[in-house]
Length: 248
Image 1 (cartoon, rainbow, N blue to C red):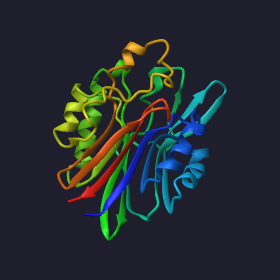
Image 2: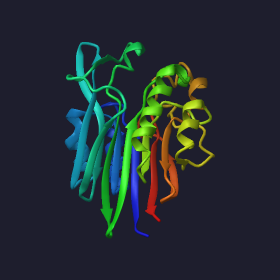
Image 3: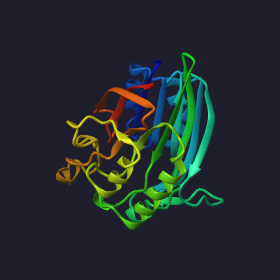
Image 4: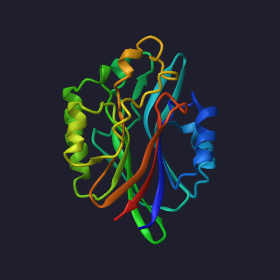
């Protein structure tokens, strides 16, 4: 089996570039999946990942104070990316929806999609998907999340793949259980949260709410074997996922 190294991380826009970019350079992943990637930072991530191919898909135009920034999903690879798909599990409007970083009620006003691509190493094609799933208050399952998860699973039901990203739904909850009916959870059980209490904005005011929020995920179908999965903290407000992927 040909191995592929994957890194997935929610980078919280441009807030942690001094941490996350050196981390990517050290890890040298074959494929890098990024959530909350700001459009103005795409080329910096491509350089850090020594990327031969990359994709950026906007999800929202977010207000922070008086300024707006566009952020979304990114995928970078040291190998060519092929068979690229954007699969939306919410309606795609004609314009990028707006949200406000200070108003949680607007957090669901974003495109929601799975970004998929093939990465070929050593003659073996790997199918990789990433998403930033629908937000909910305090990690509680909502009717909107249930609807969106059913739609996401329907979009991926025919695929043999590895799925990573920020799922905004903690392990042990109802939304997470919907995922594990279809996919294998590959985050080792000793990790009980993927939120960085030192870097997350709620880490000082509500640390008790973050300690059991394993919301970032690495899932696979039976055609893949995942080895050496780990979380790396001190990178962003979310821990980065690092793992070795092999197609059986």
